[in-house]
Image 1 (cartoon, helix red, strand yellow):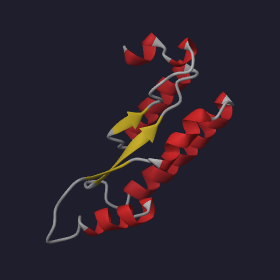
Image 2 (cartoon, rainbow, N blue to C red):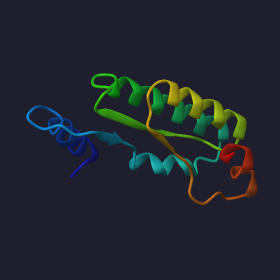
Image 3 (cartoon, rainbow, N blue to C red):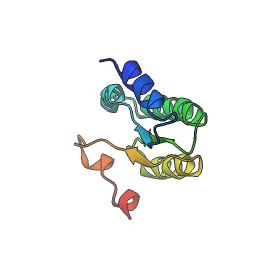
Amino acid sequence: MSEATSVALAISATRPPFSCLVVLYSSQGLFYFKVADTQLMSAIFRAYNDWLAEFCSTDPERLKGIAMINLDEVQDGIKELERTAKIGFAGAMITEYPPDQSRSGKEFFA
């Protein structure tokens, strides 16, 4: 089943007589955590987050997005996390295995 099909089925499940919360995140987007260019990765994630926010805005009570956050530049990551929280995202996805210490800033987790 494709990601688009999964999303379509999840959305149809939110219509009466069903009532459920659908949390949307990008499994395909995990690939982009491997982008070597920090600025490009951040731009990709902002574009994805903007698209997902618009998608979830069709039913904000039931559709909740999970932001993609780049931690290469921790302060920028914090700003993006705050921005996505303000527009209704339920959480964020960060890289699981940072390739070096620059991607595991303590201030992000404070």
